[in-house]
Length: 113
Image 1 (tube, rainbow, N blue to C red):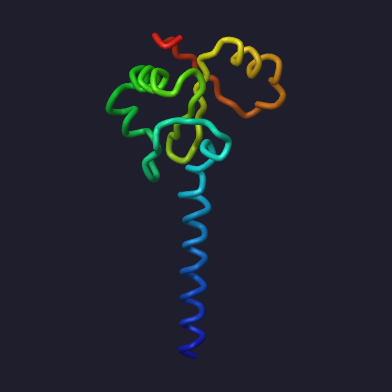
Image 2: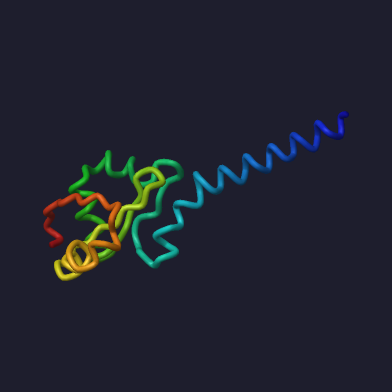
């Protein structure tokens, strides 16, 4: 009986560790895996605390200067990509529209354009 309890506790612990990795840690590697540069995300919050500290506009300007016209950041575990190249924006928003059906478009006019 005690052995069964130990096995169940170990199995529950392993499932918890796997779920933690799958849903709380692994999403922070999405942008890196596809080759998009950006600020290092903080666990669970992503870049939200830095955005709150700087303001969204200053955050965007800072990393546009640092990473160029295409880069990404995380709000929580959700990846966001910033594109400031006009031709690439046309490609994504018009020509390849059907490939990006679940996107949110946020327009922020900054000095980095």
